[in-house]
Length: 277
Image (cartoon, rainbow, N blue to C red; front, side, top):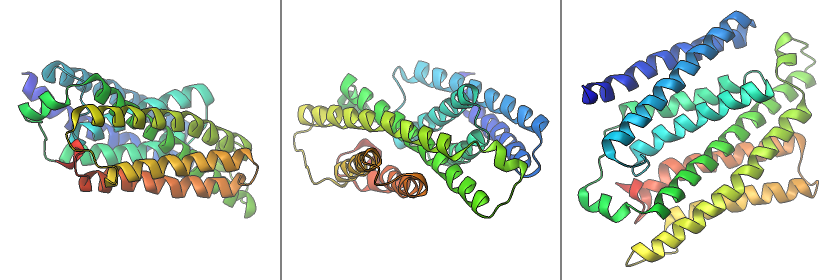
């Protein structure tokens, strides 16, 4: 019974998720508040079902599910939905949920149709370490913060374009003002950078303890530190008032593509990272 639920639940989630995204798209085009409310409720159901699946997976595996790319994608998708729902409730910024969950749905779809990866007993024994779990979890949470920062930057660029072209539509007023979009994006970066830094420190500590041969020049390590440097530089330049507004949004957008490359491509080229398998 549990195995059947583990198979069917993600399929149900994908269907409801797709309907929710479709309704958000209709609201984005036609400015329909009723459709927006229905979409939000469906997305809340998706979050509940995802949380149930996460709990069942933990119950079945006896651990927190972040050891493989298969598991990491699911947790990343769950983090994006959780953050988007929370920010929507707290800050009331329209279209945040829509744009964030286009990314979340894409990640969930990759997870749903990816081949299932079960760590071998030897791998599981090697990887059962509190340091490792905290390292991976904090890394994914920082990616979630950076992803939302990208979404707010994208909304900033859209709002900027509408204002410049003097398109006074209802959509313009629902996007919130430029200053608020910029501030939220910046705050999310402030949250993401220290989380990523702590994640890297814990990951390096685990590698020194567990791995017989540790390579500093591993592509995953280089990619992660490059990501940390880029986002730290963005924070520094913003504080120095050298980049702000549209330029800051463009920098955030460029940095997000480094995240995608580091998460999906570089992890597979790593010599020791578990998501290489």
